[in-house]
Image 1 (cartoon, rainbow, N blue to C red):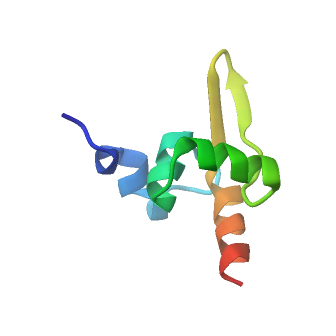
Image 2: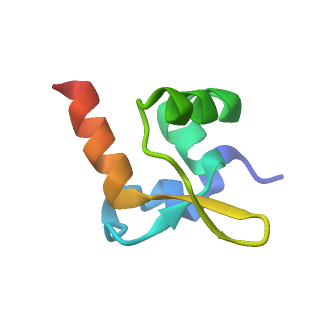
Amino acid sequence: MATKTDDPALITFDALPDSAFVQSATLAALFQTSGTTIWRWAKDGRLPKPRKLGGNSTRWNVGEVRQAIAKMGA
């Protein structure tokens, strides 16, 4: 059975280029919170808005997420 920590994007998040995109589940695991909270944070401006990549594919830009994390720590 796969766990949240089996997500390759989460395991390699620090090595991903700023141009990469990740799912809400990856961010939820990264922040140890729920997907609902990730969406709420995006709506509130704590996280960047996700991008629609076509069809049902919505992802967050890694570079923008890193900038948001830096602001949270400031």
